[in-house]
Length: 440
Image (cartoon, rainbow, N blue to C red; front, side):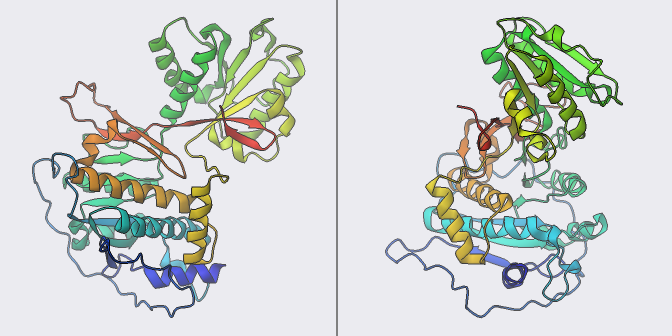
């Protein structure tokens, strides 16, 4: 399988250390048949890697983001998109592909399927460049010094936290549109309305739990439980709860060294005839979560309880599934792939036909982010970041529902530009016989 991924990788990509590969996606003539699927047995291209010599270009100071007002303004236009992904080509040797490059190879393979779909469905032309961000900040800085980077108007990536911060700083004065597909950091960009965070932040997860819980429970039935070092997360819950009105949540903050709940009185939060709700914004210690769930199960008796946790709980391996079931455990998730859907099955087949491998979550994400970007460009042109708060997208990997984020004290009065735009759609999953799945 690694050889197949390497073949895909070498056949399709130029890294930023040489002039990046440029591909043009043009909508075909409607009277012509749709191009057939690629032949996996066809001979493949080879790539020669060289080092860049391009100096850093001057900063452009064009006022505002390019706009094309009105509906369908992107029709017939050409847009230049650049992908910034960690393919880690300098770490590959022979037929071996670094395991850490899997995110990039999967993401871009999914993106290529979306680009092909855009060429058939939308009346726009896309020119794409692919850059290997490598792993080190110094290597990524070399990409920022490449004058060719200036040619793109829309960027998808990078994914590493430090690279995202560096690129946010680079792209802001240049009025570039950036879609950050991975890093879920709050307040990463300031006064950069073209910065679009696809992965919801921790704040968005906490707010989603609060809104969901308040639909079914009174505030005095809810207890926020965490270690002392995690207490700074609690305002995310309180702020939304206060806005909804009706009273305050309880708090139970325990010492950081807590490893057992034998001496912590959880019974005082249990009331006959009422569901007791516990919210734990914690993920670093699987043992801590396990100790809590074990103790709660042992003392709850006939009282009904619900527990809400973080996405990382889905990967916890040492917790008895019975603890999840008996305590009615829910978690949040930025994405959820329903493998029973026909669209998902169709995408899996296309991905396998093109690469000889099965798509993972990153493959689905690359498809969703690229398809969404193409459709927004076709509908609004380069002004699409301004329209995102009124747009919703249901993808195979996850849903997009964007909010304007103001971190500098302003509010959305339709006159102020946001600091950035964030996808705040978060799934609520409940544990059942088949694991975690969306609540009805």
